[in-house]
Image (tube, rainbow, N blue to C red; front, side, top):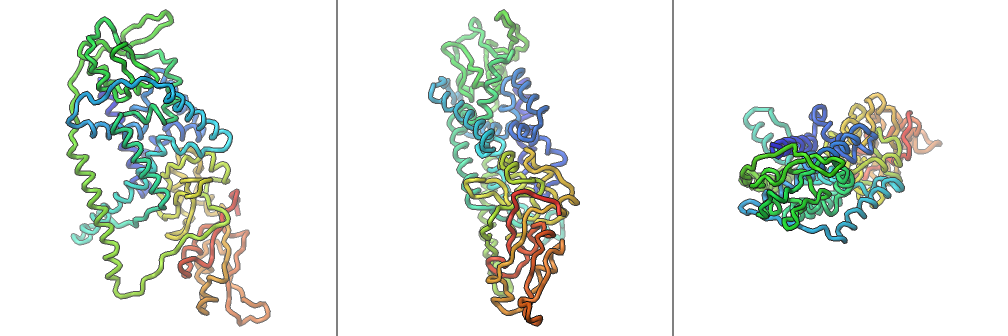
Length: 504
């Protein structure tokens, strides 16, 4: 029964968190956003003491139930491990806790804590929730959108508007490479050793194992009942059951409850410890046969994803080939900014760097496609604003609504429209007024705050071409001018971020 409850809870969390990243409209956050906010590291960084304490208490009572049923990366490893075990039986074995691996495990935890306190949260990019978010946002989201657009194409032909097309873009080569590398490393760990990553590299697993030492609950092995069949050890994905000594290493146990249901002699039960060392059994679950997962759905999902990817790669060049004979317009390129632009609600770069885990949930839900992961080492994979594909519209506050770690505080549309996140600067060498000798007032007309005014290029000649002048006291850095500038491939007007946001 405990195993079934654990599987049901895990299924809910993996589905809920995946849907949060896939829902590019951001509407599901109202109902499922709490599933991201109760992840351990985001809760700690957001100052959500109640959640952090609750997870610690749950660990004391139930062992590492967080790792088993709430952490999306842990659940993902279980899925991969189950697929790897299709057609195989008794694929695991006891792995003794070797001293170098123990030192590595707790050394990583110590390093993450030190870096988070002294430098910022840079090392927290290995947080399991954030790692899962990177994989979904960079790999699964584009595939999902390709599939959506294919369905939208069929729907349009049949006169239905149940689906609508959405832009597909890869936010950066570095972010995609990091996601693929993460998937490869985690996948290999899970494929070969089940929860090997959780008990070797994961800092959250190491942190929670500290509290397991003080847990009053444990599933000990009754040595009198044990028949030494070894079935529990052969099915322990954490490799923490020693069939010879008939002991369970609780520091590595992820509370999956598989051993409770698999033991044919009922030698493993959930028991309550007392100060005198005696144990009182509080649960004795009858063994049930373990049903092997059907891999048909997983295989179909992989094949479907590959087909959608291929169709998307083929369809885009084909669409360009039949554009009616118009001259192709060069895509905009990202300019070199003197300061990166951080999202509205982040307040200042230092605070943002200390709280952001780089989970990229805000990148996934940004409807204007202005957020992309940074490729710089100093702020690797943290979201930054860039205006090649759109601009930060004053009425949109999606990123502040979904951030689970408090890196972007919730703000209203009114607050955002008056918050300066950057200041625009004009480059005369790129402006078509000088390069093509034509009139252009697009930046002035599109500026939502009226911060741009066209003035004569020469103060002595009022008939000289008019050029844009930016009022730094009114510019909010929304990027409308940069995005809509007709100059290609680089805009003639570029927004540079400010260290600390201010109200204008």
